[in-house]
Image (cartoon, rainbow, N blue to C red; front, side, top):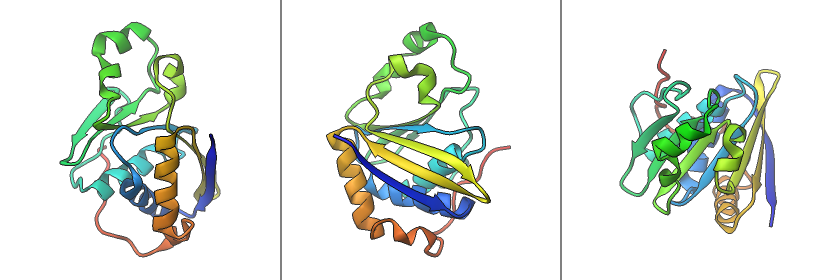
Length: 175
């Protein structure tokens, strides 16, 4: 089972809008693995998802804390950043595996740094710098991921509305 979606995001605003669209397609129990070079838009995409779910506060990159939790009425979203992750014992000691449950959406930047510890990603999202914008490629690996990708396609009319007018404020980054 594998379904894919690829598109170009013209700028940061388009990445945020795509994140909002993705927020409307997620369901509890989803694991999204984000990959791409430093500065490719992983945290920006996550900010868009959080804005789409209703979060209005700041959205720090969890590079040093490894995890930032966000609790919503319909689901819990856990934003991991495993860029600096090096110690398998830290994963086990922290109880991070408990966050991957039927109520949660887990968004994991640099999932490849702990790939052997993580469950199969429902969606692999790869971002790459392309001029002033980003190229985005999503691959679904599970039935949950397929459903999410199908809802995203339906909501966006083949994801053609990414350039639509902004849908409101996005949580600011922290310095």
